Length: 68
Image (tube, rainbow, N blue to C red; front, side, top):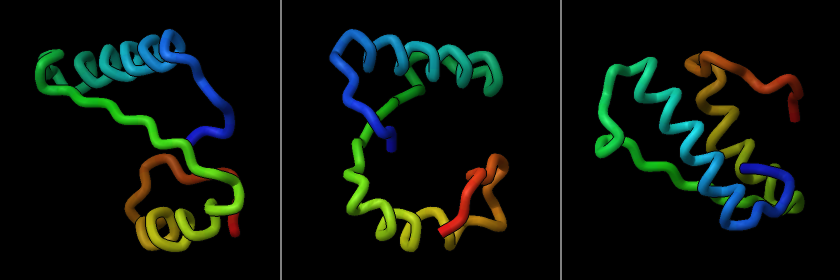
């Protein structure tokens, strides 16, 4: 999901920011939001693209700025 290692403090801060945005835009509560971060090795990215991104391309609201 992301190209670098994050320490626990950085992961917590990122999850808090994501949660804040979801609460604001979806008018939901903190208890309703879960956040997971899964690091993907560069060598595995093609498989992720093929199985998770490419099949959803038409429905993605924010599309990647690259293609594979």
